Image (tube, rainbow, N blue to C red; front, side):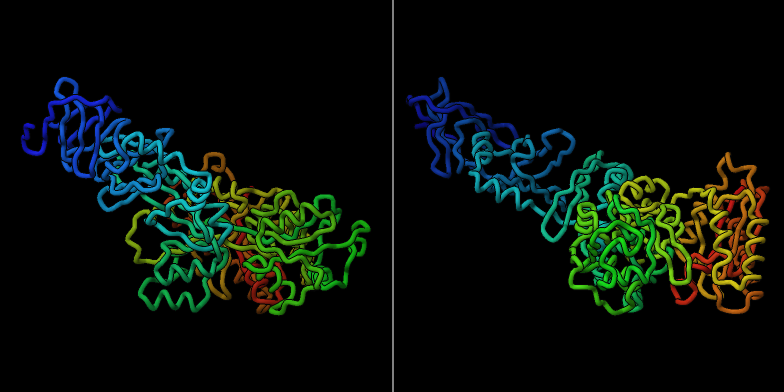
Length: 589
């Protein structure tokens, strides 16, 4: 036997076996032949014309159908690519166990199942090991499918289940274009967690966004404790949450740089599509949910038993029940308790006698109905009224960030979400986008509403003002609202002005007149409120004129009107209703 270093030659002949190739990482050693044996430290391979050779396993990797399973040691460079070739990841293979690759590149680690990717490179497991890894038992396959590998997340979003499940997945693909990447997912995990993996087109480590869908309050709490980068919410933070973030020096959650209103929503009362009832008062709803009214014939419907449905948790329940019942909750024992909005939708769709409440992205094939308020105001279940935030149970869809997050992708994502480019995805999810639309029937409704809650003479005068000053005008869905006696604009109003200026600057609007119409609540004297409403309208007009992009609007026809308490969109007997009535509408003709 001749021995040179760690490679030995045996001059003998053996029975032929499966073909293998032994290769070193630097490519200088490449031995091909038939596999004879492997003792864990060295291979014995028969090379035609030379006989048997012994090669230390530490010097080479084994390739070919004859390689023994136990001969493979991870550590070489590999490239994993999805079967469709859309995504790839290169790095060092640090583990291959139970059919799962683990590959490290710089500070990123990627895991992938053997049946989901192809492996190329010097460090790939031998083909027979890959094949055997794919031949899992039926029991193993079930376990593998039910336990995908959860990657370390680069950006974490937590909060509202409807925002996380219905809206955010729709924007992952357009956001990938902003990142100059391709995206795959969602990969779903227990506890309503989903991950999206972004692969840079120019190469490099993947970027992982994780979305945890649960509840708005949880999302804001997780932002405060530092375990979420973005909170998803359908309601504002409470004062304790605002104070907690501020105490850490991480800003004000209500500041426009940290609060991003991406759309609006309504908790709509819904009935079966065959139900002829189009509107119900709050009093009637309370009677339905407490078994005082049990048949639809009692409220103008068919002779059919009423089947009320209620959520057993979530913000939709809080919004509806706080409005209908106050802080108490005393529903009839026959009320169906439903877990998710989708459960409510199916309950109303499947039962002709059912009534329930759902946020707008969950109404499905049900019929929303109008609500008649105690003061006589009718709040219509129309998309325009929801976009104008005038349906009684309206909500804002929000994203929150702190002012210390160093990740540029956080700002990129929230900025995209409040831009017009995101509007189609907001609408597709079932929410109402902030895109501006016109309503050419609004004047007739405002004329009728001018009489509500006013002395007869005042109401008639208000109606004359409406019909005279707004004749031939249509209303825009954008509405600016104010605190009592204040002109300060919130984060949504500031961004609404950006949209309004862009809308006014469209070529088709060049010769139109834009009218800023101010309204007030009933607190204070009528004359004072008239001047206050006019001042509010004037302030919004001045904001528009001084806007950074207002150059083309310099010669546009703009005017203001103050209509005081006329045309309430909600009752003035509580703080919420008064907040709806303190507003500036934008009309155009």
